[in-house]
Length: 161
Image (tube, rainbow, N blue to C red; front, side, top):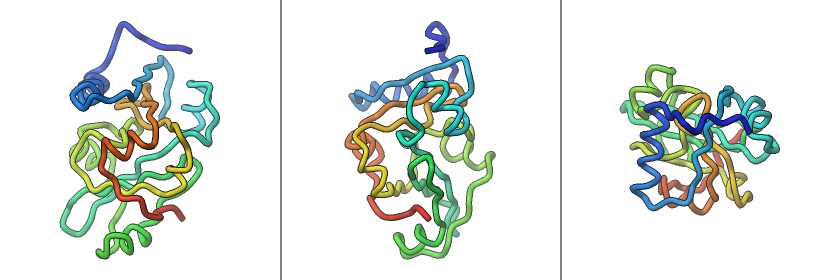
């Protein structure tokens, strides 16, 4: 595993603090290579791509953040999100909005640790352990799905296409 254990950037530190403050057993994994895409993350972490999740950030008509958590190979559906929450269809957040609303950059957005409405696709919950954004493009968080739901208080509802 190519890790850089002696250095944690500010985003990774923030996520690590969140995990500690919430007595989480989730594991922060830091690498010296990009984990921006599922393919890169799977190769870097030496983990099957089907064990990854994506946090898709959306903005509703009030400007509030919604995060649809789907399996790495799936896509999030804005129409399914709108039906699940009985709201107008949200739009995908821009990278700047993601940073502003989550406190984390696009490509490293974790599935918890900030204020949002979290929606977890049921296919995610079929896995015991998943890997998601770890705060930066070079970090991942390894977490049980039970812990994922506890940390983000997400609603389990179909949001994948």
